[in-house]
Amino acid sequence: MRDSDRKGCMMPAMGRRQFMARSAAASASILLGDYAPAVARASSESLQQKLAADVQRPQYHFLPPANWMNDPNGPIYWNGYHQLFYQYNPNGAYWGDMHWGHARSRDLVHWQHLPIALAPTRGGPDKDGCFSGSAFVDRGTPTLVYTGVWPEVQCLATSSDGMIRWKKYSGNPVLASPPHGLAVTGFRDPLIWSEDGDWLMTVGAGLRNQGGMVLLYESKDTIHWNYLHPLCSGPPFVPYSRPGFAKYDPVAAGDMWECPDFFALGSKHVLLVSTQGSVFYFIGSYRDRRFHPETSGKVDLGEVYYAAKSFGHQGRRILWGWLREARSAAAQKAAGWSGVMSLPRVLTLGPNAETLHMEVPPVFRELRGRHIHHGNVTAGPDGVTPLRGCQGDSLEMHATFVPGGAEEFGLMVRRSPDGSEETRVGYDPALRTLLLDMRESSLSPQADRAVSQGRLELAADEPLELTIFLDASVIEIFANGRAALTGRIYPTRADSLGVALYSRAGRAMLKSLDVYEMKPISPNRLTT
Ligand code: DQQ
Image 1 (cartoon, rainbow, N blue to C red):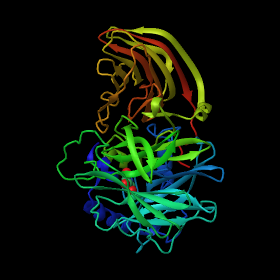
Image 2: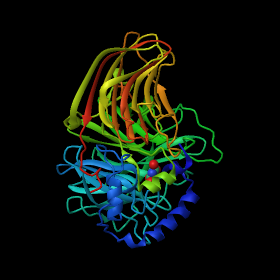
Image 3: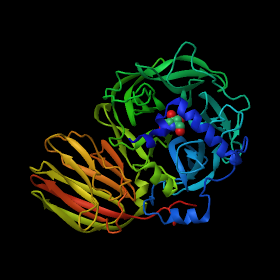
Image 4: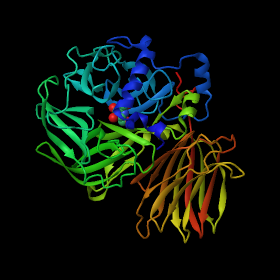
């Protein structure tokens, strides 16, 4: 993750504070006290037209009309709508001056942009930003809980007009400091739920050189909170290597767990935390208001999926995640937008409740258009076989491979006829690795050139089953129902639309491939 892209979650507190002060001054004209009724939008008609024509802007993923977006905040189903809030900077396509943007959807697919839900209040506990949090309903009243900065404190806001306008609680903050005696690395991203007649709240935190921590509080009224103990703390629950870093950064070190999410799933409980640039899941049991992790993994094996938050509806647990950009900060600013929401993912437990499985809800099939099928195509050795009739930058693809002797095999997508731009989605059987090779995805010097990969164990006779959602600069991959890997790609050529089968050092068999063209969810790439 390049430094300029990590600012949202990894900038040291001092730098953030200075940055926020500058941003707050620049945006004084949009600070409207308790209410912030302006809808998130492009600042001019010409910007709106530019964004509506931007071929890198997705066509069926959610994103704000313009500017910067990061974490999903407070997803909840309420009053017939899936409500989705998000960290939003109305001033441009860069992190800072955090507001809560808001949109709602009847079907999880099509969206209506709504007025900005939360804006910093001058002189208030959130004067330097409204950071991430959650939504809950208290005796019929929709309520948001979020972190005001600086310092980090927890605040409430309620709506009495159907979640359109939000009034901040006059006694904010309801949690003014971390527990006495705990020198935490951070204190943010609250989650509130009710349990056995009590309200419970978690807050993300951690201890230097000891790992992340989720603090647990209880209350009778959501106003007065009593600290109980850590719901869970780590390590050893983040058994992933810590990349070297010059300056101590608690998030990079895994010593700060951001955006904790906690919920029952099947016979277990699941805790999600965001740290070290990834979302980690822990599956375990919840007893005596403590969480006991039993297994863990990464929600997404790529480098761009972060700060995931879930909500429950009709027995399903549905997860949103922020997909950051993978191009320079200058390119993001020039584009006028940054950040996309992942497709929603329905969560289930895998065999023996050891892994977290994810799939895109079936309602997205309604976007399917033209369908192409290929069957029994053999590739290799060292071959690239274009798949006739398959092309596009807005596709849903389902591929089943029978591994032959190839050292690596898979699909190329967004491929130009001369191969100068191509993105590989493949599998390495020896290393048992699912990979997304983006080194040749773009001719633009502004685009990252990375290979994202992660372990995917296939049983001896198990085929590789890939589901790929391509949507302009977004590629979301699901493998065998139990691994997800997301990336951002920025092909520059208008003809970088092809799909091909490839193999390296041996043969591979594409047993079947079904490709659907996907229809856009709005006529103008969600700019209105
Ligand atoms: N982003 C928010 C924080 C959170 C971080 C600030 C995670 O509340 O910890 O924009 O990306």
